[in-house]
Amino acid sequence: MYDYIIVGSGIAGSVVARILAEEGNKKVLVVERRNHIGGNCYDVEDENGILIHLYGPHIFHTGNEEVRAFLSRFTEWYDFGHEVVAKIGDKLIPVPFNLNTLHMVYDEEKANYLEKKLISEYGEGSRVPIMKLRENDDPDVREIAEYVYQNVFLKYTMKQWGQKPEEISPEVTGRVPVVISYDNRYFKDKYQSVPVDGFTPMFEKMLDHPNIDVKLDTEVKDIVEFKDGKIFFEGKEFNNGMIYTGAIDELFDCKYGRLPYRSLDFKFEHYDQDSFQGHSVVNYTVSEDYTRITEFKFLTGQKDTNGTTIVKEYPFAYTGKEGEIPYYAILDEENDKLYNKYKEDAQKFNNFHLLGRLAEYKYYNIDAMCLKAIQLAKDLLK
Image 1: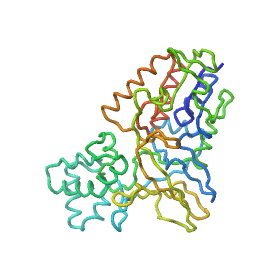
Image 2: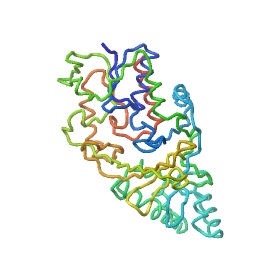
Image 3: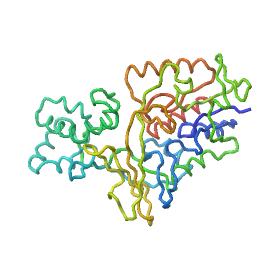
Image 4: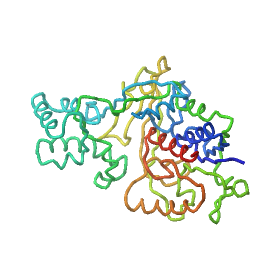
């Protein structure tokens, strides 16, 4: 009999599993519906020997020493300052929009003038959400805001979310600020890295413990039954702990309706040339149906590769069809109410814990998810 059943082998499930097994000497079963571990962080070499992120680019970035130290037990790091550019017309400009971008868009005299205004208004080093910048009374500041809104934000947001920016949660719109500095890095965290050998080997080491069993290609409902407020594992009542990191609406057969998500269609392409775009990520904020192109060799530091592999991302509304993956929760009051119905049902089961972006209907960066998983595991062991 297992002390814990953990559904999902992404960052949430794998971190909890390791701590429970190692620090608590608990016997853990990790159940994974896919044929691999690692969740959406999973990476693998393509047929050309280039390491690709199958579910879109993932970068570990954090300022949290505890999280960095924990994951560093299972990998060494390729550290780099992640920079993103956006294609606007025939220009590639740094995003988020910053003072370097300002000087690329305007002539020197006007750029210097606008820079002083921005620093005076918001302070050097500040990050101002675009929707807040548009509310400024100063017409010069609003001119910058309108440029960013029209060229960097509006069409990209509509492609990504299928909504107008005004309809989107401030939690989302706040992720694309105007930055009052000359720092082109997309993130400001102390650590910005990917595992040297890839995310998958990191997960393999994390789950490599005598107290952990991993069952792949398995739907949780094939071995677990939820009935009358009780959990049954392989036909017997299970009174120990369960941690669920999957989609909460699907656990209950979407009986109140499906929780809305945005999904992504990835189109991988290989080119027999040294580089396709010269950058790890180029955002297409105005033109094209795709939102961005990632060129993996610049993201992972791979050298001496056979050509280069890229991926284009096409957003669409998740419907639950076979092969579709729910990526981004659409956060609003109505969807929160729907989620809470499922959460209330989940709370009827003893020792049942929801953890992760699908189970909690939230967006998490890798470090935030790792930290929450560490905290949950330690709370369970108290």
